[in-house]
Length: 246
Ligand code: 4FM
Image (cartoon, rainbow, N blue to C red; front, side, top):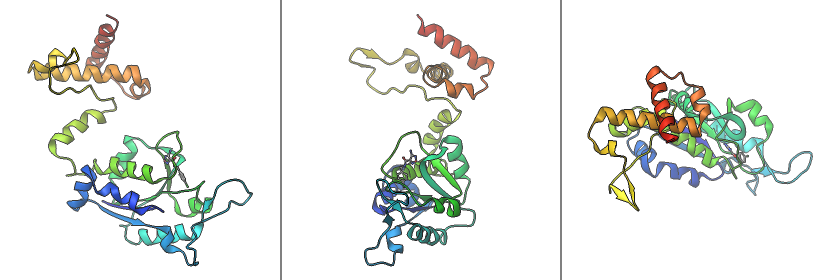
């Protein structure tokens, strides 16, 4: 899959390809990352990418032409059917379902803004989707674009090893993850739950699903509302809640 990013801080975005899962995917040519700086698409001596807002007020706005030219340049390298996504708090909420949808595309272009915003006419003429990571305000779209790339790349075939993929499955059935433990058996008087050391794989799977259901119920009831729990899962959640109140 190909990723294009338009950003005034290309070095910042480039670090996404230096580490971990995304770094490995890039080294193995499973993804290609093209980053374009609107500043390289200016024609004035000051290489101006921002200007004062019409109507007045504080802050600056990213100019139409350099961003449009950077987008055109990056789109020229992308396969047909690679939408342009703008990251902003005004966008549709990003979630795992959206990551899965993006992972089916041949390519994705991400526009990371800076300052108070981009000229609205860019959104009208160039942007297919406006996407938000959540109800908070970042200083620019770069970290959001990097988060989207990370979430999408780990869904691409062949990117995660078999072990990592198995871990992912549990998270992707719409529930929060279960708790994790590693050695030693006891730290500061806190012991690892006995079942995890029993070697009984069925019991362990059952305990983990119970924990995932219970934590989702307590912390993110909105997630459970979206699911249609089967009889077994309802029983596990019931057990969890009884054990909670003991
Ligand atoms: C976006 C700053 C555009 C400047 C931002 C411009 C954000 C979010 C966010 C900040 N992006 N989810 N929340 N962006 O805060 O995606 Cl021009």
